[in-house]
Length: 198
Image (cartoon, rainbow, N blue to C red; front, side):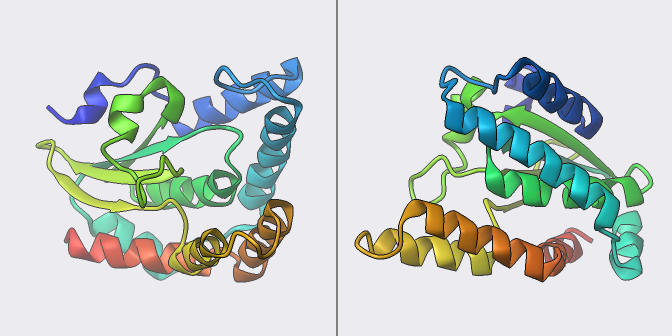
């Protein structure tokens, strides 16, 4: 049995989008911290995801690759207030949708599943989103995340220099990177992972 079978509520992409819409309509977010900042991020992230849905086109070569991989489930640990997730989740969904049911995308909330999250820490931190690919026998194929390598380098450099730019400036830099990159690095990194599972 893989660890994710012990998860609480499990969402597919459409259900997760519906959860975000309900939260935004109610002026809330997930988890115990209902701060104005996290509520604002949840609303902002919904708009980012909707924009990706309209503008992102999966390269044909990656769609073809997704059709060839063995059947697997992509478990994503995240939260609606997570900015990186809003830039990544729609791309994961489009890869899964192109796979003709070879890839099943499932989403669980980090703070509802600490036992799962703590198995997939990044530098000792509960960084999200975290993708874990599991095959039909429950074997782990690969993990990816919480963000593309180039963005992770930006974040790591920021953490190493606490006297440098502020957190708001970091967020601006990161989201500008996502906008300019247009999902290319995310797709390339995931394609490399998928090739390993062939």
